Structure formats: structure tokens, C-alpha cells
Length: 295
Length: 179
Image (cartoon, rainbow over all chains, first blue to last red; front, side, top):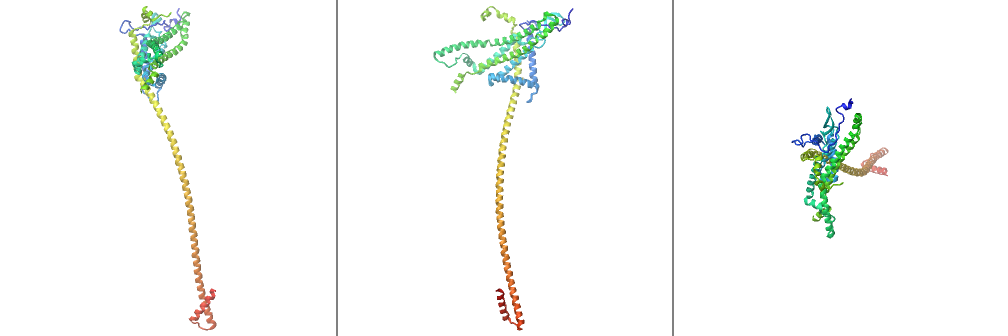
């Protein structure tokens, strides 16, 4: 005889987390690009835009609640960005950095909503019940490498645009490969060779930035999803009551941790992008000196 | 064990990774487009107005502070001016009081002098009047004495005195009275 919990259609059903997003339509069809993470990305888009619209509608010097909250976030972010990259670059880079933070944070936290990753398709065990949701309906975009790579590449392109705009192509090359310290003669030549080698390493480091950014974000959020699922499944073999209680109680502390991780990863991604912009748009001291000499 | 990049590429592990993580250009571009839509709309309709509002509020606060500073400065200036006006008024008042005091003293002195002069004049006039009255009385007295002497003489002597006798008696009597 089945217990009430076993017979209930809402009994906790948790899937092993797949490393890739599941297609919601035929894989080879026109709509094959729409995955569960694309769906959540569209939801995140909707949420962010709805809130932005709510916050910026009927704006006044004495702000209403939504405006006040949005102003608080943006003012805080803008202050941090100005501290890192300076007021001049902040005006250009803030739209990207602000979007990165908000989009990643909402995406990360969206993954913690009940039903995300647990409602979907799998081996049926009864009415509206599956053994495991192998193809969940919803998946946070930041747990899909396509999304994190897309975000990282977008950030990289904006970084490249800002860098070239600020220092120019030649300035970037000089900044990367140019010897520093002003040494001359044989020692200067040796130092120049060392700096050329360092410049090559720097180029490699720059080239793999989108990769490191995207994998770091994906890895953390994907790992968080796995932790939550594993903790939820841990009591599955201890009977229906213990399984139900375990699936509620055991992941609970990790939900708080994941809230923190979600925030932290949004901050890390944004801060790293800010630092990359700061590093490449800062003029070298000797350049200033030379400019001063010319003037 | 760390595998080098060329080894991974040679072993076709990239394809395996792509397959494992479901990397595909259409999915990738879909995510990129969604992100850029969020970016574009936030940039135009959220960050712009919010940063504008923050700047407007900052400007307003700065203006308020500047106005407050100006008001404080003006108040200090006004206090300084009013103090100067008060000091000047006080000095003017003191000067006026002093002038009034001096004027009153001068007037008092002048009036006193006038009073003394007037009194002297009155005294002189009184003396003159008294002298005149005395003289008149003396004249009248002399005439009366002369008439009485002449009358007494005519009665005693039973002789009617002529004009010369009367004149001589009058002179003698007046001389006697005057002495």
C-alpha cells in the first residue's frame, strides 16, 4: 500500500543535473536553439525589464519605493565601478558592468526558485509524476555554458572597444609589449626582450579571459545546482517520509549558501571585468611623462 | 594529470567537451542576443534615467548647500552691516546728545546772560525812575515848602509878598531843603 506521500503527485522528484541545457523543441528544427536555459533567460529578461520599467516610471526627485530600490543598487554599483576604473571610463563602461551584475544575479537566484530544475520530463511514475526530471523545463542561464560564454564574450568585446577607444591600437601594443623602467643600452635590450615575452603571455591571458570568466561562472552555478540536488536526493532510500523530510531539510542550508554564491559570482564577474578595463585603459606613467615633455 | 592543449585538440576532446556541455552556435547566439537586449534596454531606459536622476539630485543638493552657504554668508554680512549701522547710530546718537548738551549749555548761558542783562536794565530803569520820582518829589516838596514859607511869612508879617520876594523865599527854602 502506498503512503499518502508516495501517492501524492507533488512528491519531490529530483533529477541528476545534466551538464547541458535541454532543448524544448526538436533539436534539429527551427526552434532547436530554444532550450530550458533560453526560456529562463527570457524570463530573466522579462523580470529585469519589468522592474526597470516600474522603477523608472513616473520618476521624481522624491523617489517611490521601486525607484528608490533601483537607485540604491545603481548608485552602489556606480560607486564601486568609479572606484575601480575612474569616473571617465565609468560613464562608458557602467551600462555593461551594471547589466552584467543585474543579469547574472537575477539568473543565479532564479535557479533557486522551487521548480527550477525539478519540473520537467522523465520516466513517468504516475499522473504528473516522474522518477527524475532528466529534461527540466527551467534551468538558470548561468548553469548553461552557452549563456556564460555569450556573456563573457560580450564583455570581452566591450572591453576591446573601450581599450581601443581609450589608448588606440598602437597604444595597446605599446602598453602590452613595451618595456617599462626606462633602461637603456644592453640591459635595456634584455629588459625589452623580457617585456616582449611578458606581452605574449599577457596576450594569451587576455585571450583566455572569456573562457575563464564563463567557466568560473558556469562551474559555480552548475556545482550549486548539483549540491542542491544531491542534498535533496540523499534520503531517498530511507523511506517516503524521511525522503520527503530530507529533501526539504537537507538542502535548506545550501539554499542560503547558494544565495551567497549567486551574489558573489555576480560580483566577481563584474569586478573582474572592471579590473580588466582598468588595467588596459590606464595610461602608463612614462607615457604621461613623454606626453608632458611633448606638451 | 594535466593534459596540454595540443593533446586535447589532437585527441578530439574538444568535440567531446562541446557535446558534453551542449555548446552550439544557435544556442550561444540566442543567449548573446538576449543579453544584448537586456543591455540595450537597461542602458537606454534604466541606467540613463536613473543616473540622470541621481545627478540631478546631487546637483540639487550641491545647489542647496551652495545656497545655504550663501545664506549663511549673507546673514553674517547682514549681521555685520546691522552691527555697523548700530555702531554708527550709537556714535551719531552720542554725538547728537553731546551737541544737544553743548547747545543747551550755550543756550542756558546765553539766557542767563540775557536775564542778567535784562535784570540790570530793569534795575537801571528802576533807579532812573526812582531818581526821577525823587527829583519830582523834591521839586514838589520845594515848591510846597516855598509856598508854605511864603504863606507863613505873609501871615506872620501881614505883608503881601511880591513876585521877587516869593522867588527869593523859594530859593532860600529850596536851598535849605536841599541842604
